[in-house]
Image (cartoon, rainbow, N blue to C red; front, side):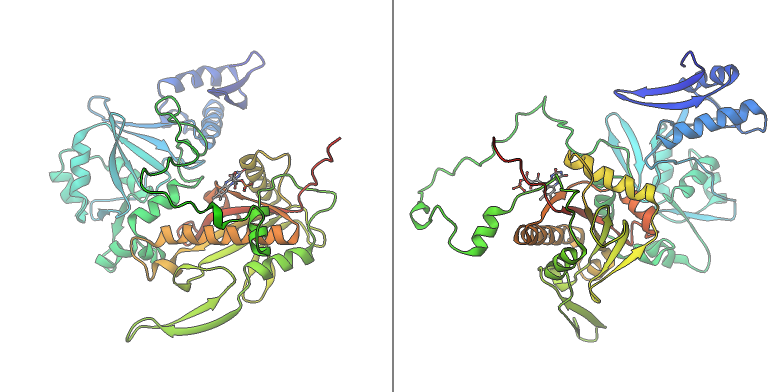
Length: 457
Ligand SMILES: Cc1cc2nc3c(=O)[nH]c(=O)nc-3n(C[C@H](O)[C@H](O)[C@H](O)COP(=O)(O)O)c2cc1C
């Protein structure tokens, strides 16, 4: 609490100013360290409203945990840890006549010396405080009627079940959907996801979890770094150096040698629309289309041919261009229609575009935003319709082939570019209104005209 009446919160070297509040609100806020009942600031009084604003601001930064305690002995039943920005606990409607079942994406695991219940669909994780809850969860692997569960479960708490339902860790079954709902969980696009693939997507990107991410050097104190080059095997050595020349022997070998990442762009001479069109034509344009059945009696599937290789010829990758500085093209977000070789504008807000390119600038430790930031999104169903267990890994391999194609094209055209390893899938979902389990980012590439290195003096 600052002398000027404002409240700031700090966590390590991260601090947020939360605004100015009355002395009474500051006093009430002091209780947040140990716990403040939601009901205590749910009313209409000026004080309640002030505290509500403060707690919502904290929640937007993911700085609030929510405790559900036993009405009998005040022991923690669960503690809810938000995983997405702005999570707020809600009790979904649930009554005695309802039947619920665990989502097939929910999982219980040990974290440190705690048990946590998580799901890639959920906006929060649930720290389990009472082992009896784990037993109830196990029972929920089969559909259970609330009235029956109430009679038989060792620990029954309707609020907890309603919170889990709101987080899509539990599903409500209706008489009509029956088993069908268990497969698609009320959303046909979820049928196409294997459990591990969905978890991998949400945990290896930003936006849907609150764990440390990126170059954190988490094990630097525990283990020495591995060497850059693997020590050779002790076996008989066949020296290849006598077959190689020091200079590349073909234009392609020269292109490979010249390729390097460029993170600093010349904003006085930005990439032009004609260059962007040529780049997309060379790397990603649909060259031809064809169709055929994969197996006897199978449906007709349409296919395309493009300049880079792709697993199963699925070509599930889509390009979204956040344009900050391109001569002849207005700032904004565009989808590349690879079939029509055209850019189609998407109405994203200036604030969202700024957040997307600032994150890229930060990831590259660059002095400014990329002129064009290409977000590579995957239409998951295009590949998981065919492949089990390996679908997501194939998608990431396809991203690798496309990124190398981008690198070589930028080098060939005298442009600059850099791959980016992090991406916020929640931000992209908000910008495009595409759900993160339908079409979502799996890679990024910064593109532009590289700044010429200063001539040596
Ligand atoms: C999958 C992938 C992710 C990368 N992510 C980043 C990144 O987030 N930030 C960055 O500055 N460079 C990133 N890079 C670029 C690498 O740092 C770069 O390729 C590497 O240091 C070798 O340098 P060179 O590309 O100039 O040869 C990435 C490269 C790849 C292939």
